[in-house]
Amino acid sequence: MRLYLTALKPTDSVTDGFLPAARALGCEVTILTDRPERHPDAVACDVRDPRAVIDTIEQLGKPDAIFSNSDHLQAETALAAAYFGLPGKDWRACVAAKNKFLMRRKLLEAGVEQVRSVRLAPGDPVPDGLPYPIVLKPREGVASEDVMLVERDLAGAVAAARRRRPGEALVVEEYLEGPLRTLETLGDGDEVRVLGGFETTLGALPYFIEERLDWSPPSSPDDGHVLEALSALGVGFGACHTEYVLTADGPRIIEVNYRVIGDHCDFLMGDVLGVPLFEWILRVHLGERLPAMPAVARHGCAVSVVADRAGTIKAAPESDFVERGDVRLWHRPLREVGDVISLTHTNRDYLGVIRAVGPDRVRVDAAVEAYRAARPWVIE
Image (tube, rainbow, N blue to C red; front, top):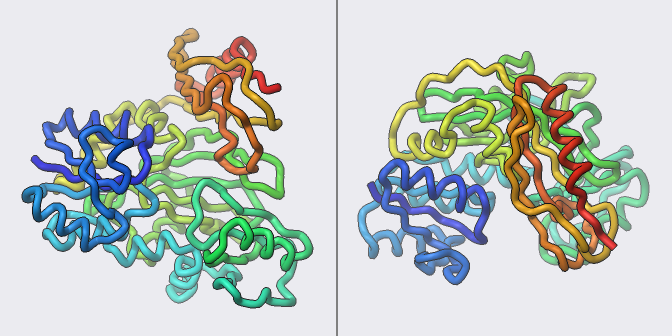
């Protein structure tokens, strides 16, 4: 089986997740990327252009699957898969999920939910009279970059965002107050299955940095609303990571990421479920049906170690795996000793990720706290 994987920069999800999974499935993998120097044995291709992807694959040989885990390449990859008649996502759903204004418009038109939202193209005047507090975000942003709660002076916040992101469209929308949750789904074209979700702990406002995610098993009463929203967007094939808020008026969608959850929570989800998650995702792109879900009686969490100051990293724990009683714990450093830290108030401030799985939350929390106390990050 020949699998083409489109990619931009290298990620742990691809390098340590999808590539080993593809090899385990017996796939011959070809990475198409605009950064071939950063991927071993990759083929250079303008992966942001579906015509270039299709042309390159035609030259290299018939595909059995075309796949991407990149936020930025879902529509292009879906168009290429459709050209070759392969299982894949609806490119229109990929566009609607990625574009936060289109997502709001689709959900409004379908009568699923109504959230006030205004699109600001470059050069558009800042609207007056919007009720505070509101959230300003890039229309197609990732990693919480330039997402901010604005309680006054929207014009000043927009001007600052435009200086950092010239030429990009922004979205202004009402602030949705309440606990933040995620729903993780996987579809094979016939069935969309809820794998579970996470309870998300954010850092201090006005920024929206995800500091911790705790596993939440399926069957939440809010799952139905999220699934209805995904259906309205046309999302139903492959992996999807959806964030929503439990407001006083019920669940409201924050964003739909039409790929598997990141920041090592994809590895955590496989650990908690006890399944080869990356293989499951690739199998549906190879035309297979979803396997049966196992019963799960474990807790898991992913804790991001976030820099609390600017400076130089003087000490840091290395990549690690430890077992503490019934708890298994992994540490993945994202920065190194000697790195200079400049605070961005985004997920780019992560120093490392700790993920842990055990019988219950009490024992998992104790293991994480003990690990962090024994192996601190030092910034001076």
